[in-house]
Length: 367
Image 1 (spheres, one colour):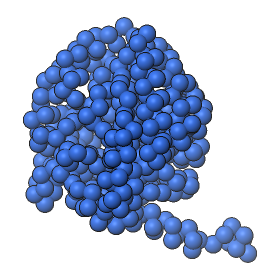
Image 2 (spheres, rainbow, N blue to C red):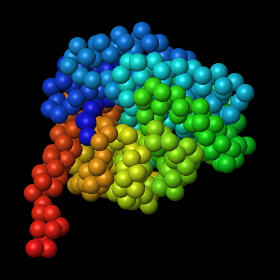
Image 3 (cartoon, rainbow, N blue to C red):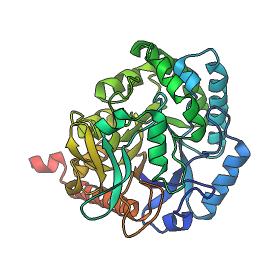
């Protein structure tokens, strides 16, 4: 297991590489090129420059989040082939830059949704929160405006300004698309992208839907174990895998996270893990929380043990953190609470490592 943290380059992050380098046990960052328009090739020279900056800080650039998929690919339009060719070239460039894992998503139109980016908890820390009734009352433009008002000037991946003018029309387009057709469009993409990923030495790791239930009647497909099985069967190549996000899947109380992790990590199909906790207010309302189990509804020990028992060797990052100690940062991505989360997760992993080494073998127990 490799512990990393997300970092946004080129002045779009309050957290520095030097600060991340000082977090014990963190070996690298998951980063991105948000200035590249969706569907265009990520330039090799820009990736090389970014890798050099990260390496100079003593960190690795082995994970990218994310090369967004153009909406024409998700829609299955004739123009998708051009954008898929660009994606394949980007995979080649990523591999040449030493990237080993690409986290991406196939969510139509809206990558993720929250009703508040700075909801105050009882201890006066602030978190991302979700109130379903509030979200469904907003149109995408109103939601984007609401979130941007608390983004402190930082970019919001998935809510780029250039996407907003077409959001309403895009949502309307999907109203007539069947779920089966959406699966077909995913398979078409995978069958073209997976061979390029293998050639580049990059593992594809799809992120679950966030939240894991339908919004605006849009297709939601990476939301539970059954759907994940269907997705992985679209292309059984081991390079076609998952980013297991406990906060996204855990928002649905019916999802048994340890069981999901054991099933798919046991198959070697989880390449990346986003681990965070949430506290439910109802079946479809929740606040994000500190990472400790007692701070939310997810059992972090059982989640980490499921990864550990499955022999997981991929990448882990503490996911969204609270804003604490007066920090002013990109919502969910301050330094302090994520550093605390990384230490907590590393502590659980070390304890499991040491317990396993001390545990008597089956033969000695019988004796």
